Image (cartoon, rainbow, N blue to C red; front, side, top):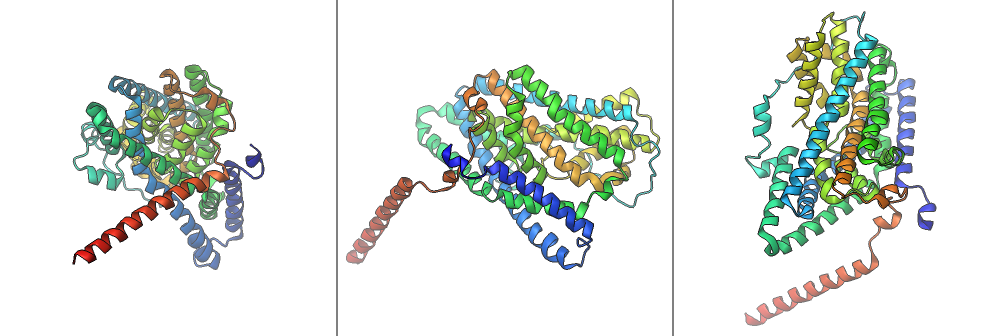
Length: 463
């Protein structure tokens, strides 16, 4: 505690970086220095800010597949009972679908009651090319990887999750003989979490760069033309995050929403900065496990699974955007249209990658199904990048909420850790190498070196 009091926590530094990024970005935007061709745009906005932000997001993505694999295999082994794994999977799946359906229903009802989109001028030069919606049968078939190497290389999360679970189950079935593999996987999982800590050390600077560039390019002026859509969407997103999800958390787990939100700030800032649920997985996993007290056997399954199929924020956007575009084009969807939107959005969220802009692809599927012109998406393209940030923060909060509820129901929630405000905070010493461990490692390296030298000399003598 004394050590921690000497400096700011990582969360505080990240929030400070976020605030400074917004201020600097807004200053660049309002001064007109963000215009293409200016030195500020070339060297700072699309230079330094872009490079630092992109390197950080890429570093997080670098960790996702190995972290999910080792963590999930370790988690399956930790559960120890294949039937228990089935229970965890079923509970997670039902809760994720429930929160997604609830989110879009709330979004539709509030957007419809405000009548957003009525009287909007329909001329737009923006073009959005829709991708054909894959049939549900293909989504189900594609869960099983035909080529595991390709699944890992392409970051196909449902396939990686499926393979990881199969590996974990197979290890459980082999039994005691697999103990060396179990130890290797557990050590590998620990190493990956240390890598997360290392990358997190530069997070405040990366968040500053990411938000500085986003605000410098977007500004706040573009929000005026779509004020109704933006206001209602942000309102519903915040309502779902702070009210709906917190009621679900309290109702099903009995845990304090205040403590939960306090500890989730760090994850929400990362999600807001990266606009990617997948890129945020390492941070979400660390916070849910170390700060909220969810056992690794639960979080290692629910977090990557949630990042893949749980899209509460994106579902809300689809509901609000559908009402907005329908009103703008004078199309009456009716009750059957609204029910179709809810069903399509829930199904579309399964197997859709948690990457920036995926909401627009899902939205094109919904529009096609209910007969709305897909070119209407061009109206909201300008503000989608900023709103995508908020949606992603809601998505990851939903993942963590379900993780806590499932852990509580399975008696895998450390309530002392959950209730402790200081639990799991990264200290400076966490980023330092343990002197004893360094000494032991040096001794091992020295022994290996001596053995190699000795073998080499023996070979020379033999010749």
